[in-house]
Amino acid sequence: MRRTIVSPAVPIVLLLPLVTACGGDGEAGGASKTVTVTVGYQSKTINTVTAGTLLRSLGYFEEELAARGKKEGVTYRVDWQDYATGAPITAQMAAGKVDIGSMGDFPLLLNAARGKELKQPTRLVSVTGYNLRGGLNTVVTAPDSTLESLADLRGKKVSTSVGSAADGTLVRALQRAGIDPDKGIQKLNQQPSVGASALQAGSADALSQFVAWPGQLAFEGRAKALYDGAELNLPTFHGVTVRQKFAGERPGVLDDFLKAQRRATDHLRAKPVAAAEAVAKETGLPAEVVYLYNGANGIATFDPALRPELIAALKEDVPVLKAAGLVGDVDVDAFIDPVPLKRAVRATAYPKASAAKPELWLKGQVTTRTFDSPKELLKAAKGADVRAAYVPDALTGTLWFADRAVWVADGTELRAFVTPASAKRYIDGRAGARIIRYAEAVERAS
View 1 (cartoon, rainbow, N blue to C red):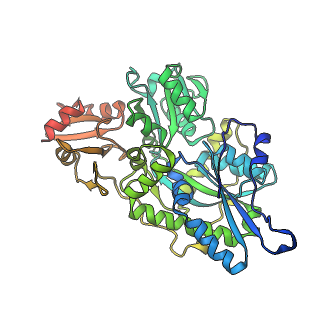
View 2: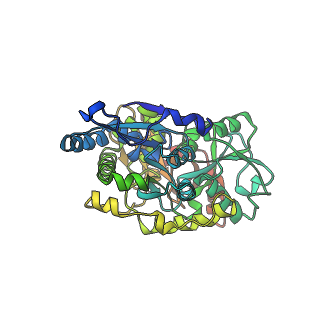
View 3: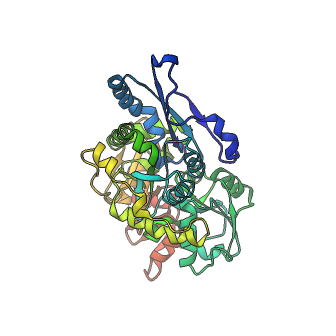
């Protein structure tokens, strides 16, 4: 098994010789047969890990295929190809070079449109991670920025990846703030890593990106949150797409992938700390950042089920992409195929996500502690050897690093918020409520 890491900046014609889609390369005479299954994934987009990074590290797909191969007299080989975004995965699927891929909701629609357009139709067969309010996407600014709300972005340079879920969040958020997303800001269409560098260099005033970039930049002290995507209260998710031709030719292999994805999801939900550490090892991301999104109370909920609310949200995304000239009409109902998941996995859905609780991860510990209130978390964190402390936004429920959150003292209560704008909305009209520093919040709690 090899791992091909492909940069989306490389022209697609140069990429084609590097990959092989599902097919046979057996020896002459048919004495043996090897079938390669090509999976495109995004290692750094960590709410796709149950169909990518974590799944790959656990080896579950290979296990399922080995059992199938033994029965069929075939050797199955998985070619995992790592990309920075969903766009190059779609390009490779349209070229017949990637069989199964995972990407965000907006890229999934582009996947559906390009597949149909280029006579390589694809189907959405499962979900990886989701957030029912949209908290997986965040707009951040530099740590010393004076920007405090979306209104402050008027006329500013904002980096994002056009056609991504983060771009969709930016467009909708600006529209709600009364800012024309095309004329009201200077949009920079950049890959996440380029945008992060631009923010640090000062050539971008803000960055709108998807998991895990905002959390990573905040954790490392290179950014602070300006807008929490959960304020839109619109679901966002990532999912698994497959070439229709491949699914028709090898339905059993697709079933094996979905079974393996379910096993990886079970593992992540049962052992979230171990899963975060494994993903961190594979990606180089801080485990604390991975856990922010993928933990027991993380921003992402992992569940392969094609929930109706997620499908409804996908339909609401189509007009945004159409307005940007990125797609025409997309038949979402035709794009979704629930049959393979139902066929492969007996119980397809987990219970819906419950409200996040404050959580503390101490150094040297392989488990975490949860608390009923932010004050209890802060009290336990004081003087402790803290690896990471997480607290949900008092309005949206989005989990954030406690020491990066905006804290409000309201009488004897202590509340945390992802952004200054959210905190200010809370204290408006509440006599005596005020924003305080994290250190003061810790002292008040104890």
